[in-house]
Image (cartoon, rainbow, N blue to C red; front, side, top):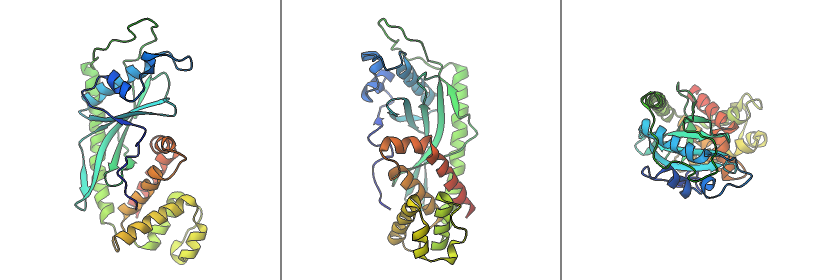
Amino acid sequence: MDTTNQKPWHGIGVEVDANFSSREMLYKAKLDWEVSKIPSQRPKSYGNQETMRFFKGFFEAGEADIETIGSLDGARILWGLARLNLDFTLGGEDKVKGYVLLASRNESREKIEVLFITVRESCHNMLPIASKAKPHIKNIFRRTFNPSFPFMNQKPQNFDDEMNKKVAAMVKLGREAISNFATDAQRLADKKVDTPIAWQYMFNVFQPETIKNIPSIGEKEVAELAEKNTKLAIETLSQVSEQHPGEMTAWGLLNAVTHIIDHRLGSNQDSRLRQAWFGSNAKLKTRALELALAI
């Protein structure tokens, strides 16, 4: 597998300091256009600024360390990513980090989506982690547009006790889900697989209706039947086998899938990230995890 030090959001998100004000974060990410100028094609609101203030409040209430902010789809989507400081290591050196992701995908910035993900440090593969936490929360800082200066109050606006408790409860559920996943990940890392099982897994992930009995056919037939994404996954898996003979595991199968989704599918980085977090590829990753656990 081609390891990379580039995170899946490389070139899209920017690293920020938790001590930055919301406006400083937006300025660094070049998303402060609602203050500096308000083009006619943009929604006339405080959307980005108010949303970033909400992100800061949420992360602080959840005791998560904000790390990166960015936008997608022409700034329609605003997102922020924070470390949960809930990491685990497999096999002594395969480190996986836990994150909470906030995203606003509508121009009104009224609803904030909450996702919990893990990121594998060696290749920066991402995996969505299902939790019992509500998948969204209302942006309580949203305001209507005022055309006169000052456009917004620069003072931090803190959550009240009720909101702090709500956020803390949501993040607690996310942490519990990641902790449970760590146990599953160790089980996958301990599960050795052979080539026929690996082939069957990749077909089941990407084209489940194509073939039912991989062990009965040879490598030539597999190559002929495999579609583009299946071939990419099998090639990635072959690289792992060459680098680590005899160490092919269910964890390796899962990471071969997440690797090609995050780093090789899609026409550009923006598209890859959107699909990995919110689109069909996010569902594909969930399917890949379920199938790996079923091996």
